[in-house]
Length: 123
Ligand SMILES: [Cu+2]
Image (cartoon, rainbow, N blue to C red; front, side, top):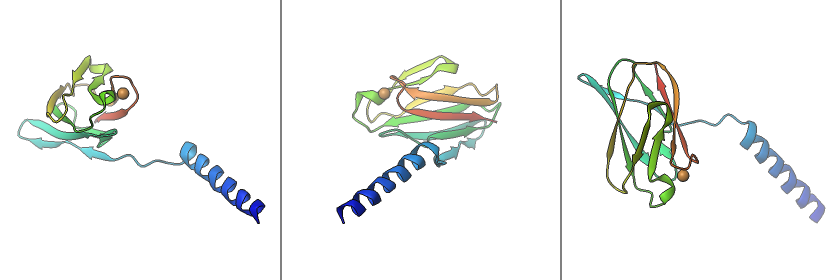
């Protein structure tokens, strides 16, 4: 009986590992809202970024507002390496970050330690 349990647990574990590494993970994606001549989107910072993938319209000035509720120091900066941005995110204070949308493409942002990531799609 215990052999059966071990086998079932082992199979479940293998299945989980396969799913973790090879499964298609859905990433929360959201498009910025255009208001007049600029586009805006709010990003929540708590144990990662929500949405994790932000879609912007090319050529429209964009403002991403990051609000960190997470107390961990890990997420207290947000870095956009392709845009030369390294912004402090004081806890509980919305921080507006202006993004140059003149070049379409897929970019990434990360926390100060490069542990948490987000994706920026300009199209
Ligand atoms: Cu970090």
